[in-house]
Amino acid sequence: MFQKVGGSLVDYENIKELIALIDASSLKEMEYSKDGIFLRLSKNENKIVETHAKSESREESAPLAIPQAILAEPAEAAAVKQEGKLITSPIVGVVYLQANPEADAYVSVGDTVKEGQVLCLVEAMKIMNEINSEQEGKIVEILVENGQVVEYNQPLFRII
Image 1 (spheres, helix red, strand yellow):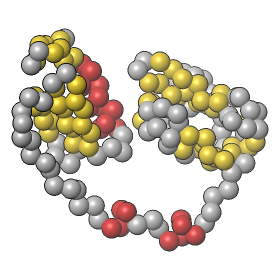
Image 2 (cartoon, one colour):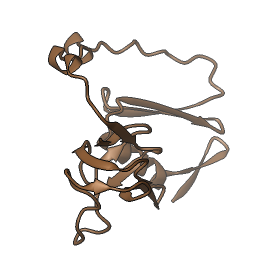
Image 3 (cartoon, rainbow, N blue to C red):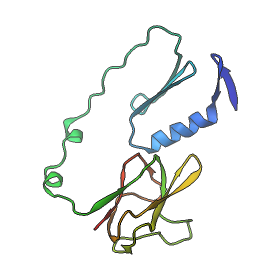
């Protein structure tokens, strides 16, 4: 469904999909602006704000207060250096660790993989993107769950 707002078309289905992706991700807030439309999504305020860019004044929101416990890295995690190479997501999307719900996982912890071997899929904009191993080695850690929304450059696997 499209509706004309301020001289441009807004696809509410895309906005609903964007809200669902942000809700499932670790993002707390997002702003988007195009063709005179300004969209701000915030998990903290639980509201959607839409204004037109022609408006001269816009209230700036106060910075979020984040507890130090969340920002501080646990001492033991900082002390332990992780070995191996991280395979990261090149895009934002939904990760799939198996080709379909009935299929076995592409890889499991302990599996030996070859360079170029498919490790998982990341779906972005209805397109399935293969994530391949960048080196030969052994999967020592799977850092995501099947169906999880992943961010750009988020670690997916650790290989040694």
